[in-house]
Image (tube, rainbow, N blue to C red):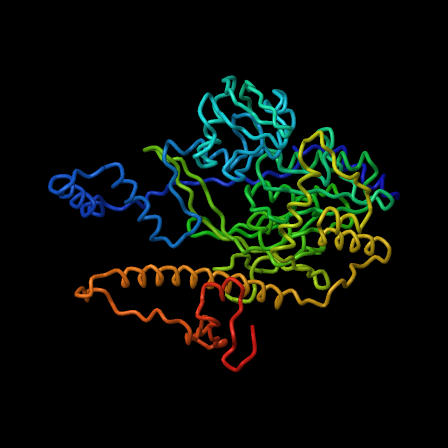
Length: 540
């Protein structure tokens, strides 16, 4: 059977036949007796009646809610008050009303990175690179980007008047009628004339699809992209890019995993209030035995880990990149009858074979998240990440200033012009799979040891940032001591001479990693440049 005929059933299948997994929340009757609230009521009454200042009762109420949530030690639990619900749902669903443009603050100016496809902004004449100087007669500076976005968004059908400074320096007053915006979560490699190119290798029939996040529309967007790639003859191999994807909808992750699995466990969900549930493939696989490679990194989290991990555990895909973030917990959003919404963790999820995704819950502290396939462990440095994002941007925005033409299948172009070395290696890997029937060994890096090493590097950098903050505090203390009255001995004495200072770094168990003597008495400069002199004489 030819590759194209083998792929044809996929094109005809409607997303509606896929199994839908519903998750519901039941409020149980485990509410405490009214005595539980007595101390809170007493404290509130005393403070309202007798505190020297009139308390803000709304702030007190908010603080009590926040304190209850913080006591859970759940970094993903939040309370969303009434006035923040719309913004919260916008971020959650990618569905809102506004002008439809990607923006960024650059040098305190609101810059249009790109208008969105068929958006009010694009239709009104907003261009990539425009600087928005005025919004409804008020300057678009001296505000946070969140505040400026709030001024641009609004009900469908309402108008917003902006002054845009184009790249040629000309200023234009533009009226934009706000519309319904649905953020696109599935993209290709290059966008021209508002159309995505899915072609990564035309000669070998290899397609590239990037999933930026998982929301309600993502499964249908992916189906549409796969159909478009199929119409272009790209049916022999597929690369799905989940790098920097923070996750999102669990149902979307299950849908998409099911597209590629004939059978097997997708994910197991275990909670305290609900019994353990194992979600399995429903035999509606429509992307049959086509080699699939997924790209992941340390910013791939949650739903990204479910999709990549479930398909890897069922031997359906190879994975290239570096270990994923390790967020294996399920959050539910519950509207409260008193107003507002509560987002909180209700369960954890594990992959087929029992591997725990969540970094905090894993019993083996060296194992979490999803590891790349052996031989395809290719880490990306922070500088390489920045280069990839900056180099890719001109090729994915909607603009009339088209850069150098894209040649489908050029590995050197991917690595050097597009700035994506990992993607160039992914193309080499899929080609090898098609030629030899097996995934290649591109590196000797080991998945577990590399994942642990990268996490150690992240934590070490975090520790250095904390040290720099402490040094700044010490400087302020030293300055205050210099100007204090000689008779004032209330401040603690402090030796500001750092020329002979020695800095000791230890691991989390207190074991000494090394000792370094600060050169020239400047700890901050030493941390910035890592120019620390080892006490034995060598430099680190």
